[in-house]
Image (tube, helix red, strand yellow):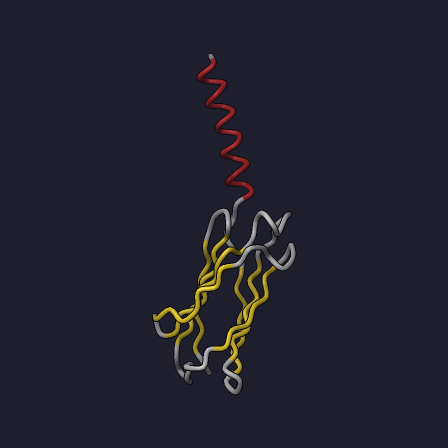
Length: 114
């Protein structure tokens, strides 16, 4: 009987953990070709941006990592706004943005430099 009760309790905690954890919902981007600045907004609704947040963002230029940004908390309960200068980006290059949740999940978005 104790084993069944223990399994039920573990199951409830696991359910709460996975219900609470979720990947970022959306990555919106804009690239300014004149300034070479990439603007990124990562939609990731959370209850507490200090315990559940976007923990890391990676920027790849033509499949080569150019930026790895570690983050300690999210800006607010809805999203994380960031900007990065990518001086080597040229028209037609592919930029890949990876966003990693501190609890569970990843989202990647790719854009072409105009």
